[in-house]
Image 1 (cartoon, rainbow, N blue to C red):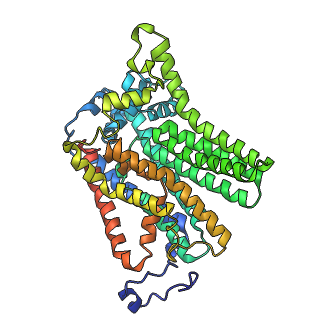
Image 2: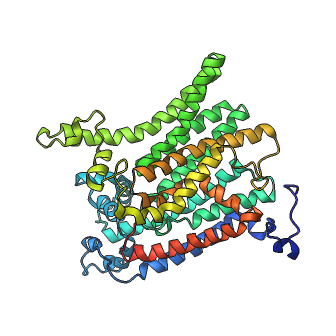
Image 3: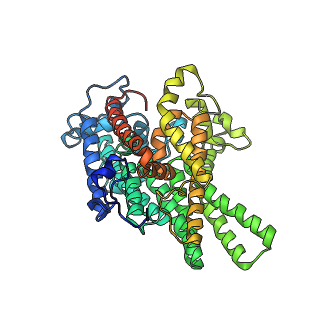
Length: 460
């Protein structure tokens, strides 16, 4: 079938399981359609979380409760249903900065503190419920912006010339709305902000590659730097943001191979300089906080030097993750954690498999994933997909071997290739039913997760 031709959507065609017409009304106004879906989904999660019963098995949130005599603040106490698990650290750090060593594992707290401090310059104390409100608003805004970033990235990389391509881009963004991260993208957590920055970085990076194709080298160089800044911001929020630096490492290796095979040229040197600058900005986002911690714990007071100070690479982040949360290679591989591996298995498998499909060059070969008919542009778009598959694949492997594996269900929200793979399933006749099952499973999982989250019950 011609890729630009719309299917007739006849009853016979539907009975055969062929794709439904992609010229639907929601594609005429995709941003408004995504906004409507986003609002409905967020309202559902909000109602579920704030109406969850009880305190769960942990009463830590109560430590953030303010005096009932402060009526304007006490009226916000119900919003603390969103302050669960790591968000307790984020809100507390935002209230009074880092106090304990283990809090350095939660860098988003400092970001939230910077925002609340800017809003509280009048001198009035900002209480935890108000910090929670600010964090929730920031999470909602960031999540919606990340939906738009993924939609723009999909339009750029997958194309939008045909109705099928536009439908694929829309479905990918819609899947991000109902991401398995669920309530974590509504709560005062770092994931929605990370997702926004990381997906925006992917988008700007893709623009740099396309600018290079049109020989607009000044724009390409600027995009490389902007992408580096966005990835650096993502790294400041979550340590796995450093994996996006693999895009620049990929380009640096390509540049080295070109220099060895074809010799140096001014254009190659210029490109390599900006690739290195972009990658270095990301590296600084990881190194600078470690240096600040090193100064505080290892040099300011020699009598309280911590064990990690004497390591070859003294990193407070890796220390607190291993010492306080037992993160590390195969440390999580215990019989008691088997249920958590089973919980993470669907998303973990999809992320890894879709990365492999993309790296093998198979994501986009089917007529269902509509690449441009221009051969050179097809190659370019596929090369971008290959690049974006690298950090996602590395993350999947690291989550399986070294993280608390269940968090893959929420940190997966900041990566694009697995959304594209699932969206492509919706346009393959043999697997359309599987896509429906997947969407239903995502919705059910997010709903159940919202109840558990609001009730302060595991898993988190």
